[in-house]
Amino acid sequence: MAEASILDQDQFSCSVCLDLLKNPVAIPCGHSYCMVCINGCWDQEDQRGVYSCPQCRETFTPRPVLRRNNMLAEVVEKLKKTEVRAASPAHCYAGAGDVECDFCTGRKLKAIKSCLVCLASYCETHLQPHYQSPAFKKHKLVKASKQLQEKICSQHDKLIEIYCRTDQQFICYLCTMEEHKGHDTVSAKTERTQKQSEVKDMQKKFQQRIQEKQKKLQEVKQAVKTLKLSAQSAVEDSERIFTELIRSIEKKRSEVTELIRDQEKTELSAAEELLEQLEQEITDLKRRNTELEQLSHTEDHIHFLQRFQSVSVSSGGEDSPSITVHHHLSFDGVRKSLSDLKERLEEFCRKEFSKISPQGKRRRSDLKHTEDHVTLININPQYYQCLLCEEEINKKLFSLLSFRFLSTDSGSKHSKSEPQSV
Image 1 (tube, rainbow, N blue to C red):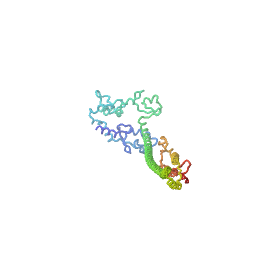
Image 2: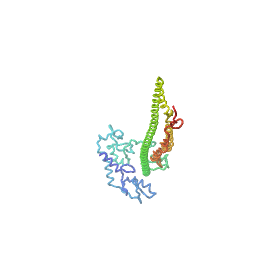
Image 3: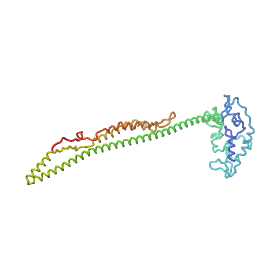
Image 4: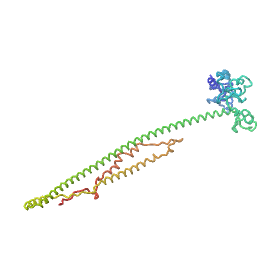
C-alpha cells in the first residue's frame, strides 16, 4: 500500500514545482499543472505569442484559457490525507539514511514531508495540521530532506526562492533589496522552467552523441572481428606454406643423399673390382715366384732347363695393367654447393620478408579509433602465399643442386693408365 501511495503521488505531481498539484488545470495536450506554475511558464512566452507544454513541448496559439479541474483537485486532496496511512507506525520508524520527524519525542518516526517555511520535517501524524489548518495553507511542502539549511539564506535567515541571473546565485527576497538590488532576478521556479527546456535540448544532444558513439563502437568491434579473422587466415596460410616448403626441402635432402649414395656405390664398385684384380695378380706372381725358387734349387739340369723355358714363357707372355687410384677422392663439391644453397636461401628469405616487416611492426598506438575514422590493418594472405611460393623457392634455390658430386684436387675423375710391364 505504501508503494501504491508513492506511485499515486508521482502521478499527481506537477512537473514544474515537483509537488502535488495545487489548483490543477489541464492544458490542451492533456498534461496537468498547478495553475500558478503553468501561468508562470506562459508569462515568459508572452513576447513570442507562442505557448508550449513544458513536458511534450507542444505549442498553442493563442494562449489557452485555463480552468480549474475540480475532480482532479479532489483526488489530490484525498491523496494528501491518505498518504502512507496504510503503513503501520511500527514500520515507519526512521532508519539509517531516513529523515527523522522533528516533532516526534522518544523514538522518532520517518518524516514524509519537509516544510520550507517552518524549516522542519514531519511524519504523517505531525503533518496533518499543514493539511487541515488554514494557517499552514501557504506553507511550501516538499519531499522530506535533510538539507533544509541549504535552502535558507545565511545572511538573512530567510527562504531562498529567488535566482539572481546577474550573479548566478540563489538569494532570498531581502537580498533583492540590498546587494542584489537592480539585478536581473527571477523566481527559482521561473528559472527552473527555462532550464528545464535547456535540459531537454541537452538530452537530445547527448542522445545524438550516444548514438554516434554506439555506431563507432560497432565499427570498432567489426574492425576487431575482421582483424582477428584476417590474422587467423594469414597464420593458417603461412603454416600451410611453410609446411609445404619444409616438405619440399626434406624431399630435396633425400634426393641429394640418394645421389651421393649412388655415386659412392659406383665408385666403390669400381674400386672393389680393382682390388680383386690386384689381389689375383699378386697371387699369380707369388705362385710363379715360388716355382722359380724351387726351380733354382733343383740339381737335375735337364729338368731345370725344361721348367725354366715354360716358366719364362708364362711370365714374359702376360702383361698386367698399371692401375692409378686418386687418393684424395672427396665430396667437397657437394659440401660447397649445399653451403651455397643455405646462404642463398637465408639471403632470399631476408630480402623477401623485409617486404612485409613494415606491416608487422605497426605500433599499438596506430590501432586506435578516432572521432573521424577507424584505422585498420589489412592482412592479405595471398601476399604470403606469393612470397613463399614453393615453385618460386624451387626455381631460385634448388637450381643450385646441379653440381658435380665428386671432385679431385686436379678437378678430373679417376682414370686408368696405359698398360705397362711389371
